[in-house]
Image (cartoon, rainbow, N blue to C red; front, side):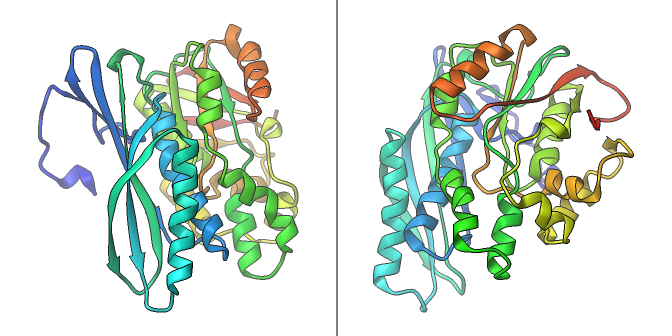
Length: 320
């Protein structure tokens, strides 16, 4: 859709929407750039405080995916008449808690009436432009590391359909509310060639954006992929959100799946994620030290594949 708009050229815009990156980067001076993003969405959980936490963590994640630390945030809120003042306050309190945890401040915001509640943030950060990560620097030989399990979209769908208990959904809720700050902080000392976070386009969708932006291909090993408990069984029963099918349709012709990949695993790889983990590209020799650093920081870390020279497909998914 954005490709149809007139393109405005400004040499100070270091990262725009051309490479489908997680945030824009605008140079303010020789050693200073502003990084900015926004994200908001309807509730994925029933509890308003948890919803606020997850929506804020999801918006803040785009800044962490650029290798930066959030500085300022603005609330974005759509309020239907069915919400009580207490519920609205709880949503904002959940978001404010995560912004404080990020070390940033909420400087204002905007709200409108709407038929459906929606909440999120516009987030700004400031960094040396040479230290900013992007999704466009992956190099053949790099290792791919993912920092959160997949499947929270499938679990959220199952919870809405009363096919799992809240206890079964709880680990995914906790992961969605967890800031990618800790994974980012652990990765900063390493040579991060490229990074993105895994959200609505699913693992394969965001990985494909990285491959295309970096002019290379990615080799993915599903057997190494972290998955929330119960997700595979749900996918085998066909409990997969409609967004997974749309993601798969969009990637048709861009990925090559091994014949051994089951429809359930394919659905998991396309599952739209909310506040998912970071996908990091680092030199192969830094893989194990980074995994150890992520573990020490209390963040997850799984080696899920590698970067290969550009081929016929942006992504190849192998069984092993």
